[in-house]
Length: 324
Image (cartoon, rainbow, N blue to C red; front, side, top):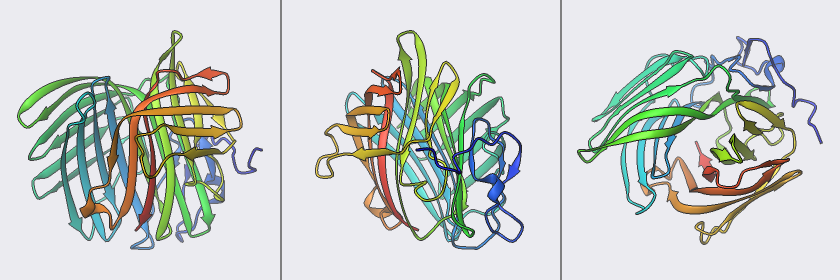
């Protein structure tokens, strides 16, 4: 059933009002980054993050930068899929990051540096550049933003003072290099951006699945989620075929074996029947678990979303429980 707030927004809109409450006209979804997200209050409950992942058949590189007001973090991760080898550089900065963050999801610069881990993000709307410098990982990637490629933005509100916006930009062409323990490796694949702003409750949970690949001669991107939007408005479920996004109003359930997340993950909903078979599973490092417990399974999807086959699409599915 279509939620009454699962509506498409096509014009520029502010996520919240000057008094810090959610703007009702902002609640819904968009296929372009039209939401302007300036969240000034209340201190301690605001959440800001950028998650970039670069995916190739051989490896996955991800970068997470987050600001929770009381703490900020950078986590850069490289995964070699054939061997399961991982390398991570990370740092946590007490009392968050100083300075402004970008207000829209497809443009703006961000520079962070703490205890030997430095990040420079430059997004001009037509392309983005990612630079990371850490003790073990260095990343230099250029990401294209084709004008013909739809993205997915979703704004939800659980109450006037608890609201959030998330942008999922899937299947962006990406090229560059990653240096792992001094060895430089070329990257040529696709990238995903998960960009978020909002005022969240102290306890949160979500599921998310994302993937991209070529199926039957068509380029297919996939974004499915659960629980993050429950009770707040629009779902974040969509499939993108050759750049055109089809939004799904139906909810999707994630089922996986918590004792062994290496077993297949099953995603089911009205018109959605998808299975992810993991090649590799990551869990939150113990030192970060006070902020959240995350399980991510990387692998390939099979099944369908509506009448779109997703067999062989590469990506991931995850579950997070956060206390923040």
